[in-house]
Length: 365
Ligand SMILES: Nc1ncnc2c1ncn2[C@@H]1O[C@H](COP(=O)(O)OP(=O)(O)OP(=O)(O)O)[C@@H](O)[C@H]1O
Ligand SMILES: [Mg+2]
Image 1 (cartoon, helix red, strand yellow):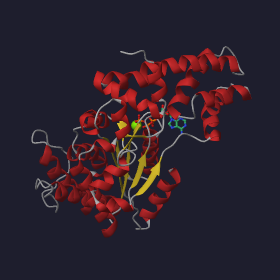
Image 2 (cartoon, helix red, strand yellow):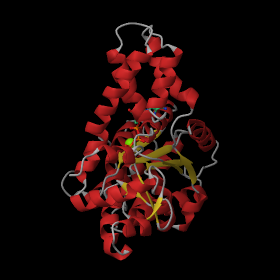
Image 3 (cartoon, helix red, strand yellow):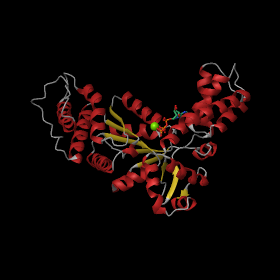
Image 4 (cartoon, rainbow, N blue to C red):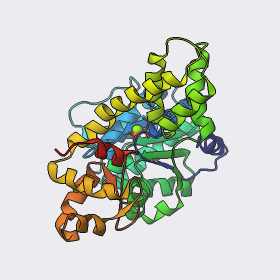
């Protein structure tokens, strides 16, 4: 993933624009951490970076506008080139398109510059103009504009369609823009439904770590403090966490707290797993469970039949003694709450690893 991003950053500098990168995976797999690393690497090359996190009901117009403010401040120097001034003027009009109250001030005189017009109210036109002009300003400095959006599955279809179309045009026209979206496993399908260009995007599934990476994730931070792990203790912690980044983090933390001295032992890991799992139950899983209504919990329980794998929605319905159409509203609500997703048409799975086992631990409520 990081290599793909680095390569793309280099390619854009040579005026070869890459397709958007789409990171998708279950909760707690490390997508946000990756996106933050993308940002860091782009900034290191002096790129302009707009990073936003979507949530249900948020609008691309506002997200993009607000996330552009910082990079725009960056280019609003007294020595700003022609394209930078144009970008600022266009961005000001874009800001006015969603926020009538507060105007940005960049402290530069824009009266003689070209630009503006990103306030037509037509989403596609406005986003296209602002991306075109801000990326041109970046290009003037021989860098590019990175647009990073987390939780992208929560964007509306209209917003995603617009993003796809603008990404397509950026590639076609050679604007120095790189887009990366991160989201739940449902994201590829949502994009596919939004616009046909999405089939050209580069999709990367973020899965649990391999054995070596999981071991490193536990060993390296300890080694930095001069603490060792007994080999069996490491293996037990990796297995206890199922190699999921978030679980490794929790179990690693609790084991660290429980260990009286170096090296960390199997006995320390046993305490760490017990406390880490309890912390996951009371946090990670609990917040999701609490968000579900009793009817939705029944549905989640019925899905448990499949363990962590996928199950046909028709099978869930029949195990609830209902017809598929009778429970489709519950299913759709669970999808929009981000608790489950449809890996393929007619199939369902949990968005968090280990959900089935958690449900098993719940007494009937
Ligand atoms: N490669 C990694 N090695 C070790 N730990 C990691 C790695 N990637 C992420 N983590 C840890 O796992 C946890 C979850 O990561 P992150 O928040 O990025 O997941 P996410 O995929 O964005 O989850 P969500 O869908 O819930 O937003 C974090 O606490 C992070 O520190
Ligand atoms: Mg995240």
